[in-house]
Image 1 (cartoon, rainbow, N blue to C red):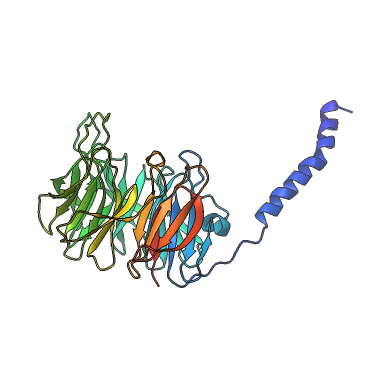
Image 2 (image 1 turned 45 degrees about the vertical axis):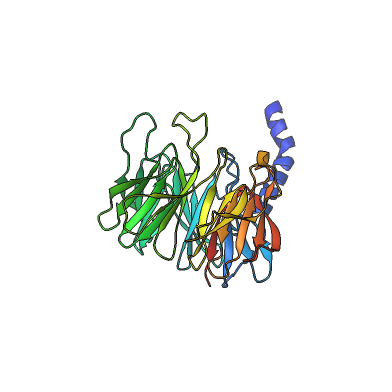
Length: 363
């Protein structure tokens, strides 16, 4: 008998057994979710180029966390670097940065419903209407205009200033006010771009401190901007970080507070009443809008400066509870801490790798 044929026959039982194992994996009984109440999605970035991003869901009424809900429901990996999430009605839009796509899911069952592709390096999604949304991008130097119903890219808004030295502008978060959408340009930049959402074009820019990484709008429609200042060895230069404000309709930013050299403030957010700002600067700080006092230390981080402290922050707009993420070493599973409005720990639970963002699902 031909030695090659004999070898195949000898291996056939092992190959057959291996195929049976694969079939068993695909035939496993997947969990059946139906979370109709209010809850919290945790977007776990995973590791760059490893494709191990994941989505967790937390039930604050039962103090229960469900990890890997996207994969467990759909037998489909979420992708490479999940970055942010937006909810519109009952649909969740998960932006997966390095995979260049946005997955659409049912927020009650976590079932996959579709995806938006053809994006370069998407960061955030902002709804203008039921049929139009903007998607910012780290590298495209344009903001994609998409139709959330057809899941198609319908246009783009050029944002490049054609500066070859730093290849500006990269766009990040978006906040709407009247017909305008404001977006911060963080990477080697110092601008807030103003977009006319009726004309889909940039109509103005506002200079702020270097590297504005996050924004929040208070109850008086004042736009607050947190800048990290870059880093000392940056070719773009470095300046002391600061918190700035742009009054409603204004075209200039005013410095409200300057930090110290070496500080790295991030993740600016606001409470449900719109009267108190929160941010991370290793620890969690809060700042009462209109107060003559500087931001106060609110929740101390148990981690030393070498670990970077806390990694993500969000405030429940209904209960004013504070959720803080700890990525630990970005290799093992991260942790999320739930605090009461007064800063008392209410719960702690594990997540996926590098929990970096939150998204509340309304009731």
